[in-house]
Image (cartoon, rainbow, N blue to C red; front, side, top):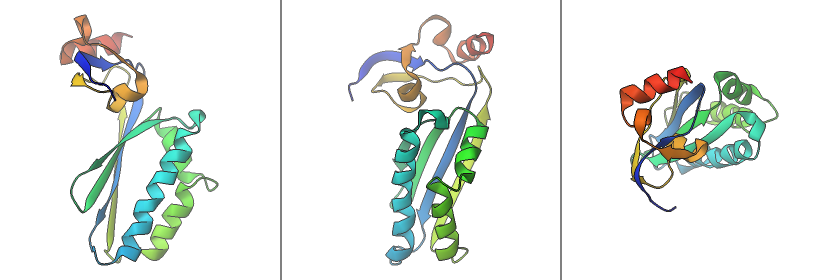
Length: 161
């Protein structure tokens, strides 16, 4: 992706949900336990990305360490996130069931998630000399000028939209 020089901000208006989800390999030698968990993530992201009505905006993936991977996801709202998580016809439900059956509480693989509901106007982003990233990659980028140039002003401007 091309670097966009200068200061940019995202073009998102309205509320959103930030969903942080990931896994941690607790026992490297038990590949048969953690590899299926790792492999389950990609098909879920592909499934969501193909469905514009899912409420899924997109995800950024980060390798936190040799043991831990993190996905930072952006969603339209909590209802959309929950609907996907509970949809027995979607890829998440069987992956979750398989995890509970194969791993359960045996400690070989850790999983986690955090969910943040963000009200309209209650977020601020700044991208300086960056390729499109994060919320800006999914919602589009605009120059961070005027009221979009400072954190406090961005929050006020968003709240007034």
